[in-house]
Length: 210
Length: 226
Image (cartoon, rainbow over all chains, first blue to last red; front, side, top):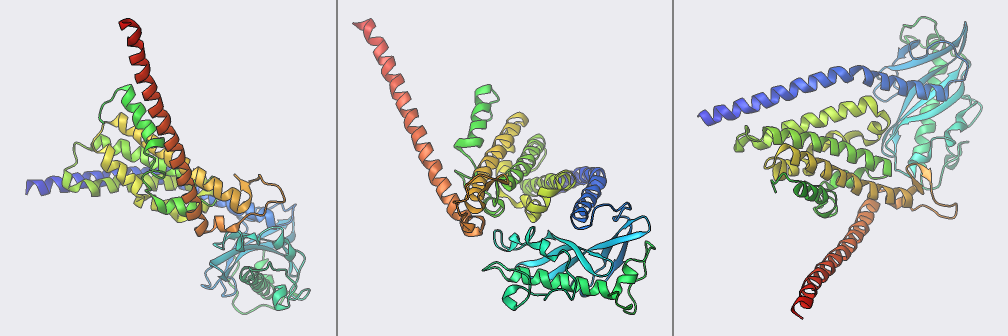
């Protein structure tokens, strides 16, 4: 019996000491981790938004949820870039559920009127060397496109976006996701670009912006 | 093994780094080894993260080894190891975010890397703190060396780069296979073969040196008798 007691006691002490240390480290790293995540978002925002905005898009954000943005319809932050009273555009993450290996998260920016300003892959699990070749410069093809200006599809399916031989699943998923993002944006532009930091979620589809 | 003198520690160090390398010789910890080494940077990152955990857990376990009853040593060791892994996970998340993103799930999985528990069982639970620290560092560096070599080979052959820089000419067409899972096995096989060749050469040289020394010793005595 005393043996059992001693074992239990030792394990309890080990567990307590370890938990204490972990709590301490967690507390010390909480802020740096949040900062690192923030920096990561800012980096991809810089890549897709046009130069010259003078607000902080990371703060000036509104949340919307829709099936077209990601399959689970979980809230997506729309970061608005403004210069003075002029709105330059909004950046947001669309998630393609139909990549070759899991979700592909794409940060895309749209200018008022519905023109794509830029896009960038922020997270994916595609095959190294094949599916992961679809970042820059390939993804720059979205720049300047609107819903009506091109055929939204890869070349193999009769669309306007190139695809590499042997890896069509990835670009197909990306093109579809960006198109869905653009459609959602067009329907909700007024809400998305609304100046209040906490815009109301899109109840009835507002008049399409154009 | 438990001798704390300079020579002993030196042997412990060389053992971990080279002679008893946990990848090249013991073939332990194959899961992270094969999975994350698609580039040299990933290899270094994973190696150093593992080395940090090894050092921490070895020192800690060696320090408390006399208070832990034998029957519960494994759960106690695992709690210690899991704590260090979580600490490394948090620190990397905070200060090395890019790499943390790339290594993803494999950082928490260091907990089940048999190299760590293996060293705790085989070394730290039987040796002093200093020797265990040296063992942790050398085993960790040996692991890092192996992952760096494997990651480097796969990155050069599979994507024509080393540490993200282009190192091969335009005429070289990278073989994508090497950054895919099969390439990991193929590359590791050739690296192990290369390691055996070097070791055999080393052993032969050691034998020759030994023979020469014996010759010299007997040769040295001859003039006296002559």
